[in-house]
Figure (cartoon, rainbow, N blue to C red):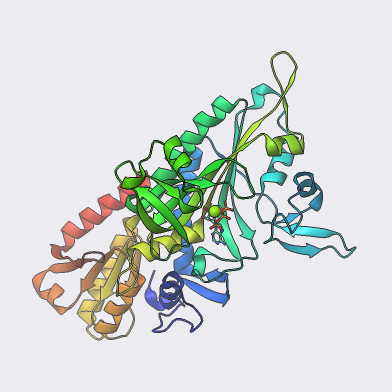
Length: 426
Ligand code: ATP
Ligand code: MG
C-alpha cells in the first residue's frame, strides 16, 4: 500500500487522558482511535495486526479440532437466570439494555450459557462428543478500571473457545492440548519467552483452580510468582504453601513479577451443561453429564501486550508474524525522478511477488519518514536513495536491532520472494 493512500497520519502526541504506553503508541502511529475511555476503533493498520493475530489463533484452534461459529451479542435473561449469572450482584460488569416492551436483555459479556443451550439442539448422544466450538466475538464489560489502554477495554474482541467432553478424563486430555495450543499462539505472536502458564483462582466461573497465561510486563495489573527454570508461575491471589506443594514448586526459587493476563483456560466441570440441560445418552441409553471447559484470549489485549513488551523509545517493534506489513519501503527523496522511479518499480515487484509492502511515497523529509517508520514499527525497512542508484545496492534495516545491510536488488527480490512464498505455503 502506498502511504499517500493511507488516510491515517502519525502524530507526535497521544490524547492527554491516555496513560497507557500501548494506547499512546498505537494512537500516535495511527493503528487505533480512541472513541472514549475503554473504547477504541481499529484503523487500517490496527485491523491488519488484529487480522494477523486472528489468523494465528484460528490456525491453532482449528488444529485442536475447533469449529468456528458466531453467537449473538443480544442475550436473553432466561438462560442466565438458570445459573444465577444475570444478577448484577454475581456478575457486576454487565451492560444491559431493554426491549421496547421493557424486557431486559444482556449485551454479550461472555457466552457459556447461550453456547451450551444452543448445543442441546444438536448434541444428544455420546457419539456426538467431543464437541469443540469457538468464535471471535465482541464482548462488552463495564470495567471499573480503564487505564490499561486496549488491554482493558469496555468493548473488545475475544476469541472464546468451549470444549464439551464425555468424561473428565477426556476433558483433562483436551485441556492439556488446549494449553499447548496457547503456548504456541503466544510463541508465534512474539511474546512466548516472557509468557508463563500460571495457576490462578477461578473467579465467578469455577471454584477450583484455573490456568492463566501471564506475560511479564510492568504494565500488568496482576502479580505472579515465576519459576523460570520450570517455566511455570502462580498468581499472587492463590499464592500459599498448599498450592505450591500441590504443583511441586519451591517457594524459595520463585520471583515476583508484574504481569498481563493475555489468555486463560478454565475447567468448568458439569456446571453449565447441567444448568442448561445438556446431557448425553450413553451406550446403554442412560443419561450422562457433559464435561466442559472454556478458553479465552483477548485479541486487543494480545496486541497491546506485544506493544508493551517489544516497543522501544522510538516506537513500536512488531514481530514479523503480526506486523501490519512485512516491509516498509521508503524513498528517501521525493524530488529525484530516478530515485522515485526505482522505488516505484521495486514496490510493484515486491508486491507482485507476494510481499506485503507499505511504501512511503510521501513528499516529506527523509528524517520525518524514518521517525514515522520507527514509530509504526514494521520489522524490515528498505531505503532507496541517490546512492542506491549509484551503488546498485539498497539498504535493508532491521527495526528491532537497527542493523543495516546493503544488498543488491536481485538478492533482495529473491530473498523477499522466497520469504513471501514460504508464508503463503504456511
Ligand atoms: P481479567 O482478569 O483481566 O479481568 P478475565 O479473567 O475477566 O480478565 P475472561 O473473562 O476469562 O478474562 O476473558 C478471557 C480473555 O479476554 C482474558 O484472558 C483477556 O485476554 C481478555 N480480556 C478480558 N477482559 C478484557 C478487557 N476488558 N479488555 C480486553 N481484553 C480482555
Ligand atoms: Mg482473570
